[in-house]
Length: 252
Image (cartoon, rainbow, N blue to C red; front, side):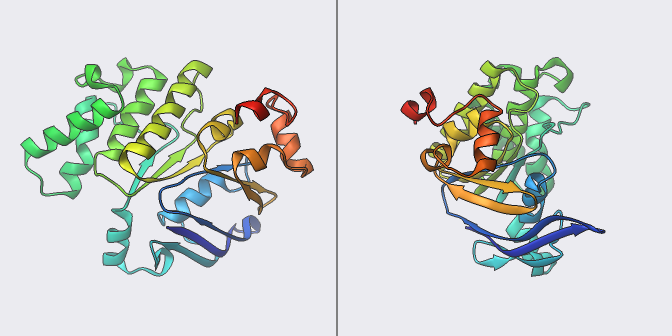
């Protein structure tokens, strides 16, 4: 579904990704983890061509997105929904209008059809009760859910999540995890999740890819990842009080 082929991305003299290759399968939840500054969010932007690679190719559903012309790019981007780290809601619009925005901007649906889509998306993220609220009236978790409703309202094939649990308390974070897993199953979408939260990654991922020092260090299932002997992986897990001999091993 998504494939990085020898992708390098540099900003001036600084190389963020160095000759990175991997493939994300259709329908899976793929979590990208790693220390700050290793190219996790940059990877998402490359997938949707908000950034272009310095070298290498990014393939989306069999097409090279970084070589696509304008028409091809619009078609490929229509396959994506994107949940930004900050939720990126427009403060002067209600939740309803925020969710309706991509349908009004990008489709020729009638207002009746838009209304049905918006209400269905809000129901899926359990936010129907806040339909007339403004972003300032919402908690952080509710803002993330509103942003997620906007991401799914266009019925995308691929959902990109940039730090979906960032800034949330542990209870709310786990609710977001449950929502990501539920939407993946109900909608059959391919989900790519950038996160620092290893509890989240271990709970929802089919596979985990770890970036470290500009390179892809490993890709593995949660079971394989937690048992890895690579010191960089164990240090990352230990920093979040997760060990391969602990309760996590039994739970996964």
